[in-house]
Length: 488
Image (cartoon, rainbow, N blue to C red; front, side, top):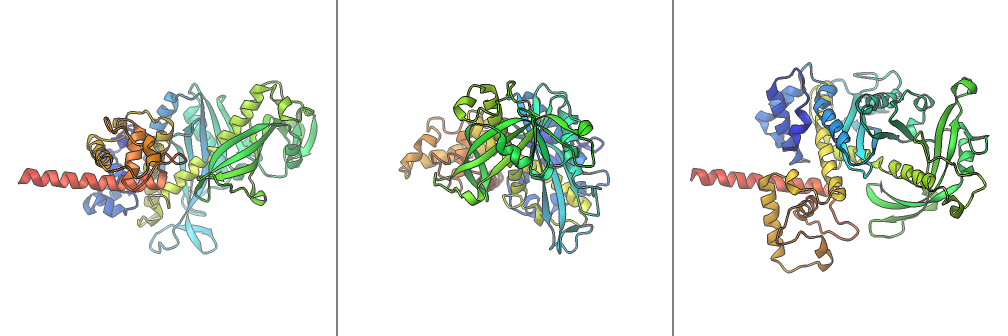
């Protein structure tokens, strides 16, 4: 059972049966995404798990303790030498929860809570797990003196958990993290920052020694190449073609601080401008008026031998191969920041629908949020692992009965005339139908009528969630039938 590894090293000071109950609950909710807490667990077991959420000693840190330790182990054993840690904030709209005690204001009459997460991924974008989560209400429980402190707290968590591993860790965040104190915050030697910037601050372009406003500095950098990245735009996959510029810079402090003492050096500005965009069907969806422009500030060292200002063509830039490839890698890393947005999507509208959870106090709800976040990670992990490690053995991710059901479904489907010959190459081989993770996920998707194509060979997060529900119902039916057979 996957959930065992996420709770085995945690819950210090709690009775072992609490851990066993959470493992069982996680497995049940994972298999029944979209069903209510009560419907997924049943009335008696629901009360037992809610009692764990309600314990005075329980909090977000305790709930995630085992998962964080398992995440660190996955980071250590990752095959990539660079790890990404994306941090971002989401909010939960709880306006309709009239009986919930302790809920705060989000904006105007909108009531709810906020949650800040740090999600680690390998360089291929496979989510390895959460390192940090903070839940709070404005002016209430766990409220921050300054909400921009959440970026520093996320950095502290990365320093704490990943400083000792033999890998480079790049902490990625969006424009809200464009805070001067964040750039100069203490970092472990193996930790770098990657921030999308937008504030009209001044930076020095190292190659020329000229101090310019950010936007002018971005225009002054030499082009180093083009690349394609895949992101989610309006909850749909989009392939962007980006023109990339890069160069070393130093960031000057605000006017109330001395530039001589407080300028942050050893940074690099990487600029990615959208020049084309295509949707999942290959159709152009480029809109010049809304084209993306990412101004990325990073401490990750681009290769030595910076491209000079007069080398203003791509052909001349190719001589600095290290710098070119490093700049493009940085852009690719930023594109992977969308993984954390997908985590929030799974938690809310994409599967688990945690805004519907009904508990009496905000403290209990925060513990439930942390618990459900582990389940959301697992869905995301399976989705992207199947894309990157398609030969991973299926039995490492599905139990014996699940594999039997998937194999039976594949054999049944293979006995029918093929309706879509173009997808034959994506179907599991009939002689050994479900042996790899990719084969299992394709078969799983077929339970909800997913048809693999060249553009979309594997189901997305939402379809996978629906398929897991159906697989769970099939298991339930088999187990009920087996029990009835034994009684007969």
